[in-house]
Image 1 (cartoon, rainbow, N blue to C red):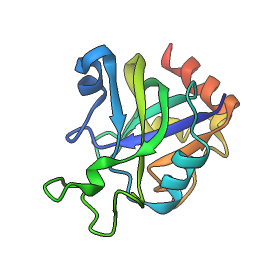
Image 2: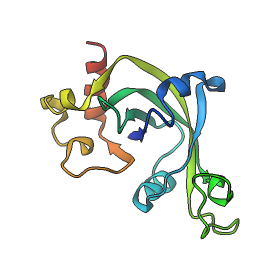
Image 3: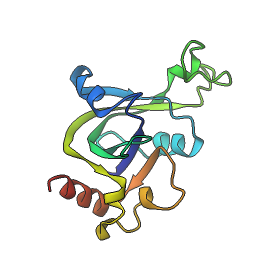
Length: 154
């Protein structure tokens, strides 16, 4: 099993939106960065656990844990000219972009703000906390995942 961090802007789709989704499950679409796409396509697998991160928020932070319930498949929003994530270069034969399905496992009792995470020694080296780290899908080590889930209980 691998661990990941997925970023979302809460005004677009929040953990509460996920909690209200049927079976607390949704497809994770709209990724339009090749490095993030490659991670999702090649490395994110069914059964992996995901830290959900609210970005572009005040405060930004980790809000819960999800599980990948379906591995990568074509992101059909890229083919829909009426969709915000439409990509005119995408075709049915070469969809270019992928999505996975995730299900909410746990909403943390409180948001773990980025400023607080930066002060936790056990999180040294975490991709999220590295300068210039803006990727919407990031790998997380088992040690960092365990430290975050423990911190959420305090």
